[in-house]
Image 1 (cartoon, rainbow, N blue to C red):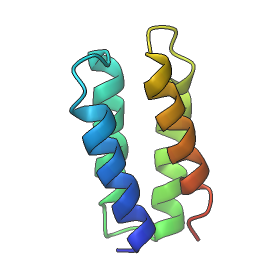
Image 2 (tube, rainbow, N blue to C red; image 1 turned 180 degrees about the horizontal axis):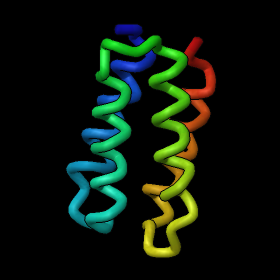
Image 3 (tube, rainbow, N blue to C red; image 1 turned 180 degrees about the vertical axis):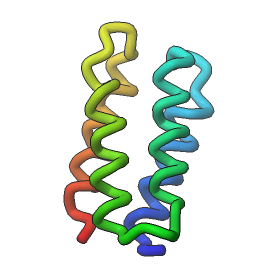
Length: 83
């Protein structure tokens, strides 16, 4: 697994999934994105595209705290660099 994907998974785990201030549906979506990113059966670019789709869907959730939204946007930017 690429180092960039490992870093993205770490950020999602530590700053979104484990943050109890973040609504449960957003934490679940982040867990889903992590599962997709860790699926070694797919190419890294496909995993990144699938994770982007999941995270973009939740990025506009009005219940998301602003600091979490910023993290999601940063993760989306990093995922777009995965080849």
